[in-house]
Picture (cartoon, rainbow, N blue to C red):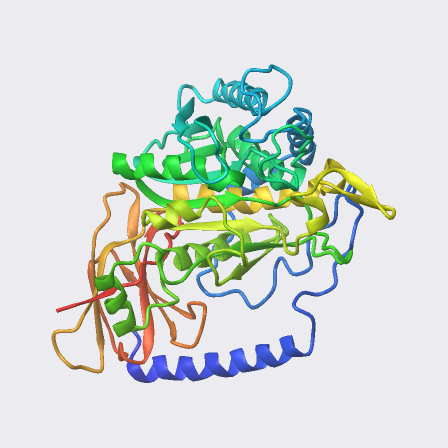
Length: 484
């Protein structure tokens, strides 16, 4: 017999007291306990916050398989990738595409060769291709320009039609966005993100994910998100089921412009109201109060559930915004096409080391140079990505067609959904939380069913449904829509 309205309301009261106590404790202390501040060349010990006791009940600890995978991520390889990309002088979108040593074409060819080298260990499961098109004159593109993404696809062994994407952009720039000649090292923005993508491709190429993972180094970001828009458009035109997309953009350093450091924190920007929302969908959202329950917000909650642990040594600070003020990243074209997508970015940027001409003024060094990157930090960001993508690919798909029955006025809640087709599907769980809470606070296992009634009013709390497989891996939550 499931929980009754009385027991659930008692649990709610207890949770509220706990939340209040936790909030008071947090108000009296910094957001995170003090952590060592190693030099960029040193490897810090695991964060003392990595196994904080206030885990949500939806938390998923890393499996032995995942711990092994995360242990293979190598800060030395991350550094080598960034330095190699910097060695091409400039990777500006309008720079040379034919010079074998300098310019975006040389970087493109190296990335293609590197990913193909990783693919040789995949037994044919990973394929690598150039995804090109000619961008006609547009903002920051004065003449027809070929823009090329380098894309590696690791085909899923059980549900290949379900796709997850991770990207970084390999183009770079200096102070003048149209300067395609000056050295534009782009170590942090965004060789660091590309290094994350390549390291994930390397460690996953020899493994067998259940769903498909796409590793992409895209171009044209600094000129206007052109490469990512082309890739997202291709997925949309092909009807690809992109269940989640992450871009890693400026993930090279935990050091802010004032010298303060947060070496165990990465930001995750996740929008609430969907960029692709139709007027009908907006009306439905307003009627049920779903501003904080978009598919992207559920994806962000999932990241915290699976990637905040001792195996990554990191905390994920979810920011309830699409992106930073006056900025935008390669997740936006995916959001605009209705795909859940979010952006990883370092905790506090140093603007002297991005979008700057390389120079020295009054003893201060400007420019996006490797010397300002922290390789163990980038490796930890890669582990956050790896924990997220691998769990997404191995877990069942989120429940489809989730509904809350609203045909009658009652003080209980009936939820329905469609059963997934995964061969290892074990069943489902219902989650709920107070409407003022950002995280799910209660989990109700309901078994292998497609309907369940909870003795709690749908008017007072938010509900969700997630799938569970026999290995104990959970999907991201689906927020149900009202149904008569």
